[in-house]
Length: 237
Image 1 (cartoon, rainbow, N blue to C red):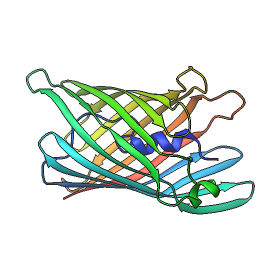
Image 2: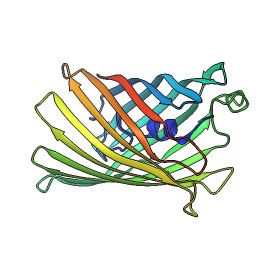
Image 3: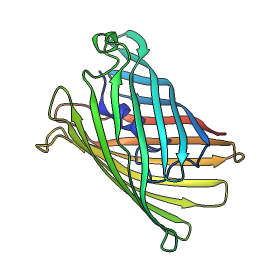
């Protein structure tokens, strides 16, 4: 069992699934270290850790590399190893500072470091090219983000991803978010949708604590619904 919940979690902006269009600051490194979990009655899937590195190469772009160690517990058997890794570029194409609006894309390639990860049930087969488009609008302390992405796969017709996020800054240290995120096949089958809530707490400019938890609202026919969790920290250099 490698469900899409863990896959779209790893594509989002930790601790959320949906990602905003703004890159890491120029010549700075952002390192997200997380523990993600998907829990069903029949199985548990963990990414422990999920390592997400982002480096700002200019004022509008950052490079990204992400890789997880996956722990799959199913039918009393536990298997661990590398999950699917990702390399991508976040590009802020347009920004209007006065109206507090931004638009960007985040193309990425997902691939398996080890082919044995597929055989052991730790990753999905094939190479995927992901092209999310993201827009963000700020109203005072509120942020609204809409993201839509197309996944092109080397083994099938791929799928669509979507996410809508609303965030509130309570202070300079605390941000709360809620989102609806999901995916479907191009023929509108195999739908999944998650309602997810998260919290970011800044201990300092260099360290931010991350948490989110959510529930699957819609699952493919015949499959049970899952609970998803993210715990982690963001380090800024």
